[in-house]
Image (cartoon, rainbow, N blue to C red; front, side, top):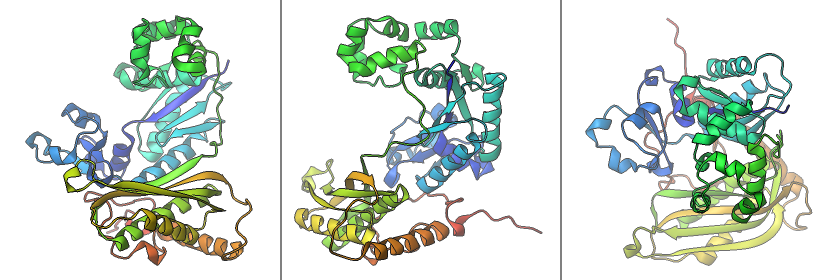
Length: 419
């Protein structure tokens, strides 16, 4: 029988912060979104204080009852590297691992000898021992069941982080009591439609007429029904699908009012986007740039626009800077206070497609990009970068509570002092 598992890192961003500071072990910790805007990750201690996902930082920071909370700006380089470390532990214990998100990974547990409960407990313990990240593991006959089992493992402390839904009778008992909203893939928009036809629990969803489910959710809903019955419709993949597009967007730390500063910001987004392209060995053939003012302060003047162009497939940062600068000139309007901008790349495909006959030789640009990537990989992001991205960059997003990049920046690694 096929058995899939899902391992999920608990309060992942907060756990990454705790990994490098033992004093945070029992302290409430909250990680904030870009620009230190709102809560996007909370420990159980922070939740107990009433902090909700999406709560605005500027409304919380002066509350007396939250004086003991440790707040952090988002540290995405650290979180990505810690996710990589978790993955490296997992591949030592199971034959296949499929990253689903930065803090969730599917496991192929099919055919493994011994008790799966013992195996999953060993995996959890090993991950926590090496990375200091606590996890929960759920498993069952399909990926959808594994996802549900993981939710149950996390939701019920008496299970101690493990949930086995391979047994039909145990699975049916949970189905009878869990709302349909807990099914992987059933979003908030679908729940009212299912409720309207009398489908409120997972049991009712599984037993519903497939024709009715298809009318509401298309063929995807029928596949979910089959998955919840233990029929494996979603296979595990060790290779991620080639993405169709990628974006680099940011809210600025302060409004931008000059074209020069906006050009620097957009150039920086282009450089970061092409870094992602080269990391995944992709070229982009379609580029978009957008800028906008604050939608919540329309009294200051509202403006939003974007421009796009089809280009010769490229992953070269200097070429991309030229493209996005031309697009920005088309949409720039003086007299506005811009608070957000971004670069979107589409028509992505593996590198090597026919490129332009004009411009710098591809071998020359490739060598330059490889050298820049190698230096930044060794010494930290933006150690070397094009001058077009600016030098002062006072408009960058606020990160007033940023922790060190302990594992990705050589100047910020922890030091052990000997006496």
